Length: 226
Image (cartoon, rainbow, N blue to C red; front, side, top):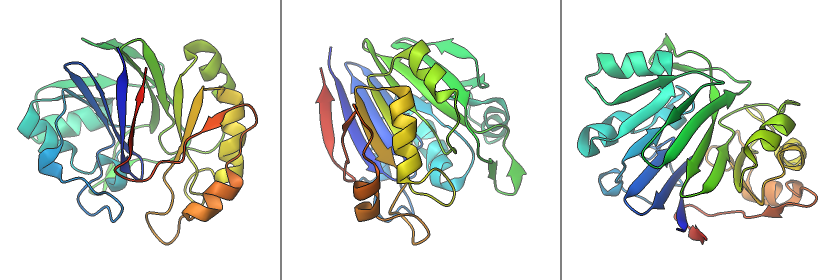
């Protein structure tokens, strides 16, 4: 079965295979590059890498409307429970949860995580195994040597790699990360949304990993992975 990959913009994605729709970091409202409308986003599962508003985004609204299961670090899950959500899978980096479509595992990420003035636990990357395909979303992070180990263990078909600089890796370091992870396809993310981040031209020039196909997606763009 193929997986449809829809880029929401910034770091958000919708992965769809059959009856399963996995939404990652649904920052829609307030995202100047997102062409989607939050009421049009359907989900069976939401994967949230950390608590910053440009990733947490519309998680609560989408989960309330769709009944989606939210998979995220323990502290965020506790917060979401306080807000009335009940379909929660608390996790932490190193852990894995089996789902109806495959599994979600969390990896380490070097960043920070807070929401509404509250500490939201460790930031994370996410491994999503859906319809026989494996996706690695780095979350927000600097480069780290265990990206090579993550690539060896999970062998991702697609890696979504932050490349906007200042708060995460810039494009050149993101390219080095892609070379360590060795996905079939690397998609740079987390750039061009706000003025402090690298723009699309800078990422296009700098994100050139050796031996890895690069797909620089525009918000709203989709493709099928067969």
